[in-house]
Image (cartoon, rainbow, N blue to C red):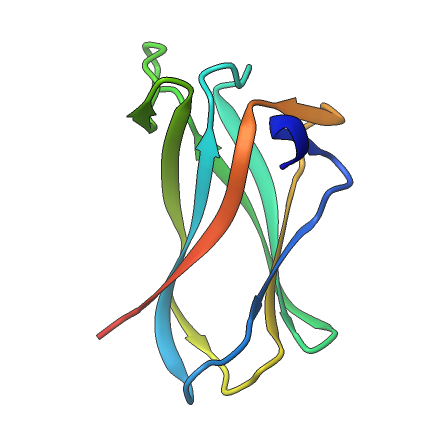
Amino acid sequence: MANSTWAFDDTLSFVMDSVSSKMACEVSLELRLGRGYPYRDLWMDIERLLGDSIIGKESVCMTLYDDYGSFLADGFGNSYQIGRVVFPNIILPDSTAYTFRVRHIMSDLYLSDIHDVGIRVRRIK
């Protein structure tokens, strides 16, 4: 993220460059952020694409502070990380053109103190 700011029109793309044949996976959304993020939650849209076709879309709310105002992310200083499983058991097709696209859907045009956004794909045994 440029200057730890995520703009509304910044859509992040994560391309799976090689997927084994019909592999079952758990996919989580991972954030690295600072304590200066001004909201309790972060709402995002995640699209799944096969080639150029959208095959699924989810809206995800990641809660960053609990009901008592305690920060839920782990870390220290101004670098904290939090993750949330968004697809607990997804079968990724045998393809080299599988993409996840992520964008925030908050009302602000710019979200401050968001350092990194990523996805983690873990094979389910």
